[in-house]
Image 1 (spheres, one colour):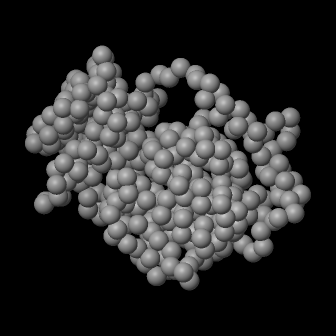
Image 2 (tube, rainbow, N blue to C red):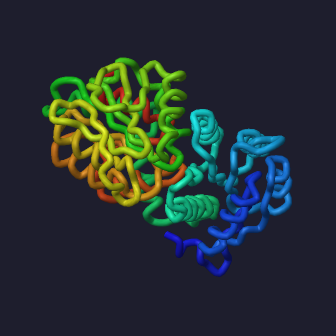
Image 3 (cartoon, rainbow, N blue to C red):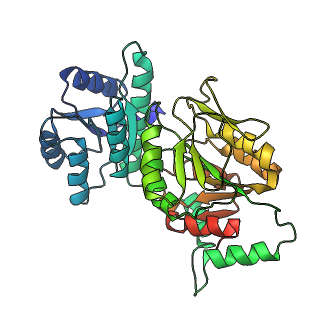
Length: 370
C-alpha cells in the first residue's frame, strides 16, 4: 500500500491542524511514507489560502480550529467546485464524532481518529498513511482500462435505455423466475471509504418497512458510528440505530455495526457484538456479518456492496452465492473508491451492477416493493 506513495513524483500533501505537535507528527509520518508535505496550516483560513497557492494532491484536516473550522473549509472547497480529497484527522468525543460524520457528509474523503492517551501511535500512523495514500491515488487522473470498460458495460445493463429501466428489468426477471424466495428478504449493506456520503443518499430513499429488516457495516473508527446512525435516522423513513447487541431484526429498522466491534448474528438471528481480533485491520469486518447472515437467511439475503477500499465483502459474497442469495454491487461511476464493489464484480458474483442513484430502486425491486 505504501509503495504507491513512493513514486518518482511523490503526491503533494497539505497538513492543516491548530496543534503544533500534531502538525509535526502528521508531517513526519507522511514524509516517512514518501509523500511531499508542501505546506502546513494552523487554521482554516490559512488552509484555504495554501490550497489555492499550492494546489496539493490531498489534504489532512483537523475539524476544531480557530477562525474557520474544518467544516467551513470543506464547504468552501465545495463552493469552489474543488475535487481535492480531504482526510479528516479528528479527536473523538460525542461532539467531535458528530462533526466528523458531518465532515464526511460534506465531502471529506475519509476519517482517521487521533490517538487517545495510551493508544499505540503506530496504529494511528498506519491508518493515516493508508488513507492519505488512497486519497492521493483517487485524485490522480486514470487512463481508461479494459477492465474499466468491462465494468462499465456491466453497469450499463441496468441503466435505463430506450425507455426501459433497471427496476422494470429486475421485476420482469423476478416474476419469470421459478425459484423466487419465500418470505421477506433481509438487506445487508457493506461499505467503507465514501460510505457515509453514499449512505446519506441511499438510506432516505429506502422504504419502511424494508423486507424483514437490515444491517449496515460501515468501516469507521470506534466512537463515530453512533453519530452516523443518528444522522441517517433523522433523514430516513427507517429507524437507524447503532447495534448494542441482543437486537432482533425488525422490518422498520436498520442496525449499524459499531466501530471497534464485529457485528455477528446468533443462531436465533439476534445481533451480537464481539471483540474478536481485527481481520485485515478491520473491526467491524463485513465478511463476518455477511457469512453469518448467509447461513441464517440463505436465499432471503440481499447483499449490497458499495464504495470502499479493499476487498472486504468478497468472502462473504461467496457464501451468499453458495446459499442462493442475491448480490448488488455499486457501479464504478458513482464510487468514491472502486475497491469493494470491484472485487465482487471481478469475481463475477454480482447479480446487478447499479450506480448509486439507482440503488434504492434496485433494492425495492429485489424486495418486491417496486
